[in-house]
Amino acid sequence: MAFLALDNLTKSFGSHVAVDRLTLGVEKGEFVSLLGPSGCGKTTTLQMIAGFVEPSGGAITLEGRNLLTVKPAKRGLGIVFQSYALFPHMTVAQNVSFGLEMQGVAAAERTKRVGETLDLVGLGQFAGRFPRQLSGGQQQRVALARALVIRPQILLLDEPLSNLDAKLREEMQIELRQIQRTVGTTTILVTHDQGEAMALSDRIVVMNKGHAEQIGPPHEAYERPATPFVASFLGKTNLVKGASVRPERISFAATGLAGTVKTRIFQGNHWLYQVDTADGLVTVIRQNTGEAMPEEGASVHLAWSAS
Amino acid sequence: MKTTPYLLSLPALLLFAGVVVIPLAMTVILTFHDWGQYKGIEPVFILKNWREVFGDPYYGEMFGRTFRIALIVTVLTALFGAPEAYILNRMKSPWRGIFLLVILGPLLISVVARTLGWALLFGGNSGLVNKTLMSLGLISGPLPFMFTETGMVVALVHVLMPYMVLSVWAALQRLDPQVENAAVALGAGSLTVLRRIVLPQAMPGILSGAVIVFALAASAFATPAIIGGRRLKVASTLVYDEFLNTLNWPLGAVVAVLLLAALAFIVIGANRLVERRYAQVFG
Image 1 (cartoon, each protein chain N blue to C red):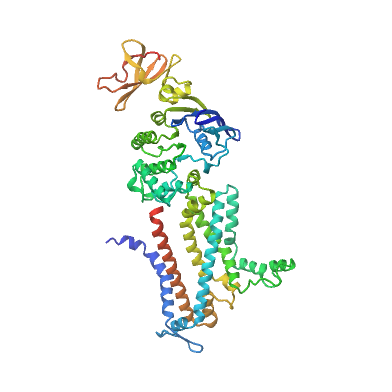
Image 2 (image 1 turned 135 degrees about the vertical axis):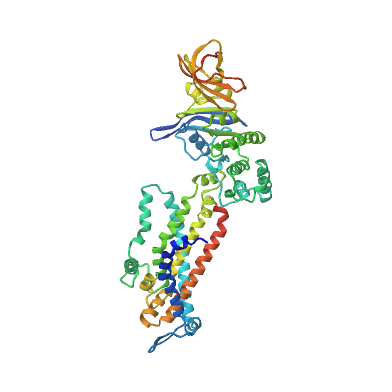
C-alpha cells in the first residue's frame, strides 16, 4: 500500500461535486502535483488531506492509518498556503518556531532547528525581521521553513509560487526542488501552472471537473496524453486529421501539408507560427537558430513524424 | 514658501480658531479670575481657584472617581467587546447584519431615555429587576443602582460598547483567515489559536477602541448626571453645577481645563505607545 493513499475520495457541496471518486497513491519521498484549471477540485483535495474540509465519501490513509479520524492539529502535516499565512505579529524566527513549541520541543533544540531550517531556505540573517519587512519571495521561504521545521510526514503546497513574478517564480521552482530533494519530504503541490507542475514533479495528476484525467510522470503525460483535455491543458496542441500533434514537433519541409503563414510571432528563443491549412489553423513552434524563417503570407509545407 | 495652501485652508483655520481655540483660551484665562457670592466674577489674575482644587481633597476624590469609572468601563468594554467582535466576525449573513444592528442599538436611542430605562429596571423597590429578584427570594433588599458607581459603570458600558466592538471588528477584518488554519496545521488547539494568533492581531483594535471608550467615559455627562445625580459627582457634572448652579465659573473652568488636559495627555500618550509598538509589525 502506498505511503499516502486517497481511495475514492469525494466531496460535494450541495449538488455540485467538487471532487469525484479520486483515487491516488503517493509513495514516500515522492513529489506529486495536482494540476488543473480553477474549480477542478485540486485545492479541495488538498484541504481534505489537511483536514480543513470534511470529505463526503472515500478514505485517506497515511502509512495504513486512517487520517480522517485525526484532527487537523494532530495530523502533523506541513502546509504552505497561497497567501503564505505568516503570523504578522511574530518575527521570522518566532514564526518558524511556533510549530516546534506546539510539539513541546525544548527551547535549546528549538533554537537549533529554527536556525538550521532558516539556513536551508537561505534566510539565516533575517531571523529577527517581521514578515511585513520581507519581500514576497522571502516571505515564501519563511512559509516553507515554518512548514518544514516540524519535519512533517507530508508537505502540502497550495499554489505557493503564484504570487511571485515570473523570474522569481522560476528561481523558486529550482530552489524548491533542491530543498525537497535535500530533506526528502513527501510533497503534494497544487497548481494551475503546467510548467511549474512539470518542472517540479515526479508525477502529475491532471484534474478536470473533480476527477483525475491522467496520473503519470510529466514527460509521459505530455507525450502521451490520455484524453483530449490533458493534451490541450499540458502545453499547446494541434488536432490534425484526428491526431494530436505538438507544435514543436512540426517542421517546415519541401513536401507535406500545404498552407500559408497567417501570423508569425517572434518570442526570443523561438518563433510562433499560425499556418492556414486545409485542416484548419495549425500552430507551429520553431527554435530560433538564427536562420531565416518563412515570413507572413509565405506558402509552406508542414511535416511531422507520427508519435 | 508657497502661500496658496495656507490661503486655501484659511477659512477652515478661522472657523477652528473661532469655535475651538478662542473659547478654550478664554476658559483658561477664566481660571485665574476671582469670584464671590455677591461680587460675581472679577477679571483679576490670582491662583485662588487652582489652590482650591489642588488643596481640597473633595476634588481629588472626584477626579479619582471619574478616572476610576472610565478605567473600569474601558476594561469591561474590552473584556466583553473583543469576544463580541470576534463572534460577529465569524457570523454569516444575514445574522451578522442583524447582530450588528443589535450592537449599535444603544447608539440609536437617546442617552436620557436609555439611562432612565436602566433606572426603571433597577431603581429602588419598584424596579422591575429588583422586584423580580426579591419576589423570587434571591435577594432580601433591592440591589443599589441609582447613585452608585456600579450603576454608572453598567450604564456607560452599555452605551460605549459599540465603539469597542466596531474598533476590534475593523482589526479582525484585516486578518487573513488562512493564518488561523496555518496555526491549526502546526498543532495549535483552538484556545492557543485565539490567545497566540487572533488576540495579538486584534490588539491594535482593542487599544484604539480603549482610547475612544476611555475618553468618552471620562467626559460623559448625561449618564452620570441621571444615575449619580448630585450625590456622586464626576468631573463633567461638577463643571456643569459650578457653571449653572453655583455660578462659580472660574472654579468650574479649572476642573474643565484639568479634565481636558488629563484626557489629552492619556489619549495622546496611549496613541503614541500603540503606534510605536505596532508600526513595525503592521505597517
